[in-house]
Picture 1: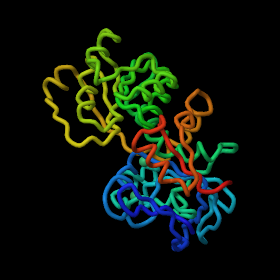
Picture 2 (picture 1 turned 45 degrees about the vertical axis):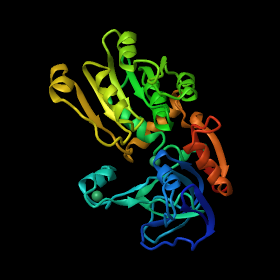
Picture 3 (picture 1 turned 180 degrees about the vertical axis):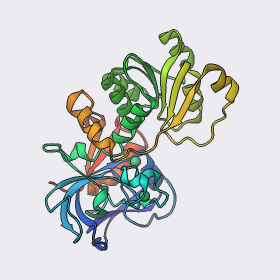
Picture 4 (picture 1 turned 30 degrees about the vertical axis):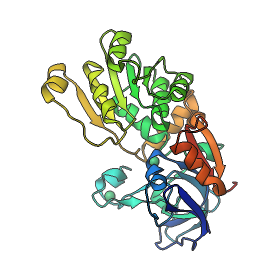
Length: 336
Ligand SMILES: [Zn+2]
Ligand SMILES: [Zn+2]
């Protein structure tokens, strides 16, 4: 099959590699139709040296072959691939919380190859009439922020401050709006702030030219009820805590390295809660599909670039360098 090979800094080649094969009875072979380029893929493109293997963890495709023990999906079914592999047997896995599995392995990966193999339990059946362009966004790109919005409890009548308006932040804005919250978006890049406003943010703040915390306090009177850190920037992480009103809650989604926290001033004396939220759980999928079906939330609204596999390098360049107004890029691996 053909697959994208990350051969060096800013260099991606399309290579012929061996087809992946079904190895276990619960394995499923999937023909990849669409694959998202994620912020966490940036290091593949921007770091030196070759990165062996087939990457890409935001895939949707069609089942082409199933192992002997597979019962839930069959040839021709459209599926969204859930990336994190759990043991499938522990108390967490039985609840679809593979991210908590003590035996958690890496990811399914393989989204930037024409075929991938995933355990049956990692496949979420696509609802009827969902386009593959949207399906590939339903795992990480929409699923991660939508879960974080529910975890922090951002809903009417809250005002939630969202720091970072990349794909994750913009989808967080849509999900928070869908649950009835008011949104204040914070991002230094003008076209991203414009996108935030188009997707429903009530205000958009430029933290490089405005005092973000001061503006949020001014707009809300008392501070934001909820805040979401989606920028992976430690300075934004601090503002995320400081912009809260007493009893406010902040959720960290962007993986931002170290952050200094003073328990007394930051948390105790204002009754502040801070929490993290990683990748979605399998059990979030139906709730997220429902949210898209019944509100204006739609991760496709964030997609600005769609490229064929042959042009994946240009897709990465536009995304990583923020060229051409790029918000989210997806790769057309095949036609359904
Ligand atoms: Zn991702
Ligand atoms: Zn497990």
